[in-house]
Image (tube, rainbow, N blue to C red):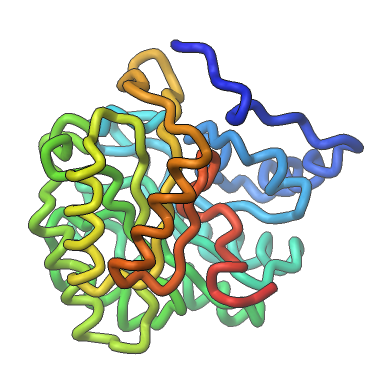
Length: 283
């Protein structure tokens, strides 16, 4: 792996405040994408008593080449997991809860019903707003509709990259056309639901391709956008093609706003759920 430029190097938070969050996650037998995807911001977020819960197990059925989450044959769904997520969110005092998941193509509904049960449990136990960050449900329209009807405040799905690189980055089951159709479907079914997406930069995309993709996503109904630098989480994952300087992210964020995105977070260390609460206006 290439050495990181100076603007991507993070200092470990002083005082060990992150340890109590990590311990709570362990005690509750929960997973976070912060740990499994090796997010560079995880210690900062843990120190602020926040985390992105990852449900439906710790093993993904997809062959995405950008992600550090384990691949293989997952275990059966844990029916008690929604309750534990809700309890952990309440104990952390979260005002905005982000729930993501591994992709579960082995399940008929892709795990949509389990997502809905988790949303309901968190809503019952906290006064928090809720953001879901699911897979594409392998084109299952009923699964998307079911999760929209659970009425999270934000429906987030990461587009990840430009169409030319889609299969190489996201795997053979990924479909850019379905991604756009899914966003349109969400907006039609629930016009007030905020729709969010994110892309990683530095995988070999051109700026022209990126701007064309952002125009597609804005046209499909996405209102919220995150842009961040791709970092290779493991040796088996794709290498970084280019490190963009911070100034490039500022300029691209401005371009995204001009294309119609209402809220944009753009920076080298921005991730899909990084400072998610601020993006929904809860400071």
